Image (cartoon, rainbow, N blue to C red):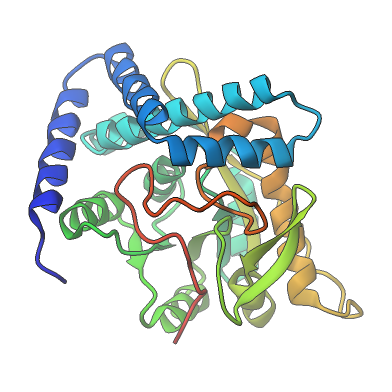
Length: 316
């Protein structure tokens, strides 16, 4: 791991400070802080703000410019609150963490595991996905989470500790395929996000909001190869500060007569994600350049300290 820079250290201290504060104040105060963080980035990060509005207008052509701007603003607020929520719940005991969620559809996971080939739990950068990962381990069983390293090595270590705190395993790209197959062969769950642009041979073009979007084929390839069930999962914030964890029924595998089963299965999974984004548009990461046919220029860095935007699937 590379040596932390001064900027990395300052970011780390700032995040630890916010974590300490939100872990010691009532929920309304923490929520207000998250709102302030989101609105601040909305005000100063013009590149991502314009990108979010442009993608919203393309995805929802019947919505007005004003509506798209409002949703974009709500999206920044949501991700500010999402950051604060993650830091806040990372200070909770397991019992308190369980009190912060309600679970819907857990039987879909149990049914998938009953088949004996493991389950691939998929979602997007939607709602409180990190909280979902933490509490899945407590409500069902620990799972392996596919992730990318953060640019800031100090924040990377902090996030990894958070992700592992409830018993989950974190899988990074190097050697990922072997570790994923090992987990599925042991009839465990593997979690993967499918909503970011990827490059290379692992990408398949699927329809997402009426436009082609390069999407990882790893999800479908693994399911077809191993027999693992594909279970959609979404974490919906609730007004009282808690979160509803929703597991949808497993996505049906296409028949063998389909010309391209990987493409068809990837499309079916993407359709479930799109359904949720349409229901709750402000809960999705519109600041990521999901489609590469817009004339706007992709910003160079993420809204919050994060890894690189491009993924290239799983490699052995």
